[in-house]
Length: 199
Image (tube, rainbow, N blue to C red; front, side, top):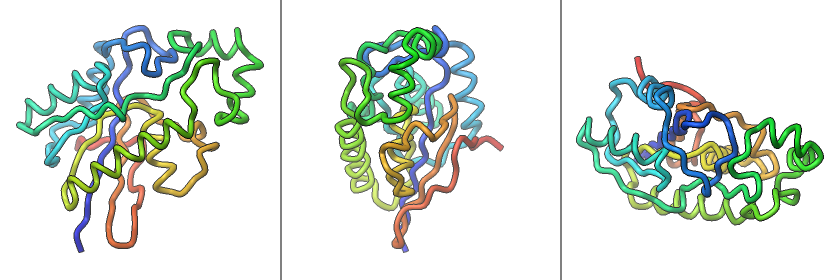
């Protein structure tokens, strides 16, 4: 039976700490962010292809990792983070405290209670799924790494475990956290969440 193995890693902590970045704010990785990612992968190098979000907090590490192990890297624009509209650039506290009622509404119903100007959640999920399905088709039977964002990983994990989109923000994704999805004849299985590949 042919299996396709997909590893997903969330970018490390960017400069500026915890805040809503979406795809409108593109801070580079902090020194700690680089360390989080290298610690997560260690010397692991079993991928045939690396696919990265176009945002620099993912792309810089992808190219460094690809160069280290001589693995081809491609950029997939559909793997950029969900757009957060007015919340982009705000810290978590600025939203949680300064926009408390908005924040509570969002937590209860992230599909309909979006921040002003945010990308519709169903549109985001569809663009991520389309990129993922294209990658699985193209790299069928291989082992690939997708370097992306918490939102992208949540969407793909929810799809794998058949969870509704409304539950997306109930999945915690750590900076530098690795997830693994195995695709076989019987369907996809989530094997790892917020893990590390280093020994």
